[in-house]
View (cartoon, rainbow, N blue to C red):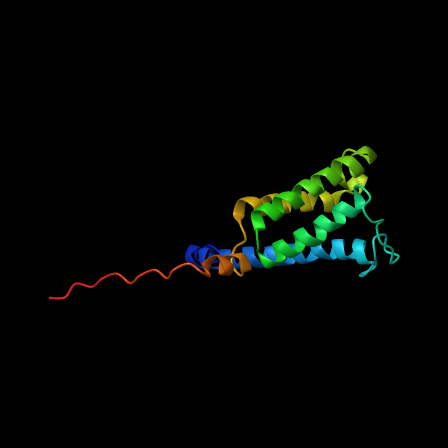
Length: 151
């Protein structure tokens, strides 16, 4: 006997995906805010910030903050998630890979996981609770009611 009926799982799926997107975006944006503004422990856990306009740290932090907020809100989710995924893949291969083959060895688990999580969001889309979906509906004419036949 399955855990839940298929209809229930399909009904809940968009909401679970929406919550997954919101949590992922929030956590990613926190990394960017920490690096740019020194909040939440800062870039190195000591309240420091990354140097402005220096490659790659400053640009990675901007991608984390802006991309994380866009994903969190569900605005341009697929494009933002693609940029975030690429940023994390770059971080993994340029920073972590040289220190060991496996993420557990090179301390690149977060970068690898974020790269794959954001890539998943590229293909699944935002799910429910997305501001982009609401904004997309604004300005669109409402669907006209079908004409009813009278006898």
